Length: 64
Image (cartoon, rainbow, N blue to C red; front, side):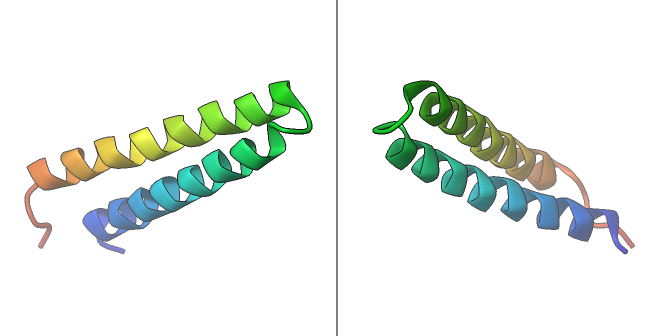
């Protein structure tokens, strides 16, 4: 598998998974604040990592 294709797969997994975890944490926070905050922080970090990988992908050249 092309290394850039693999990176693109992980980008979307990180972004969508992070946003899903963040929104789940938002709803869980009403019942359990520590669990909700943990989900929100973890989700935000995962989404931010995905955005960082988008930048990394933009700086890489095309693989043969």
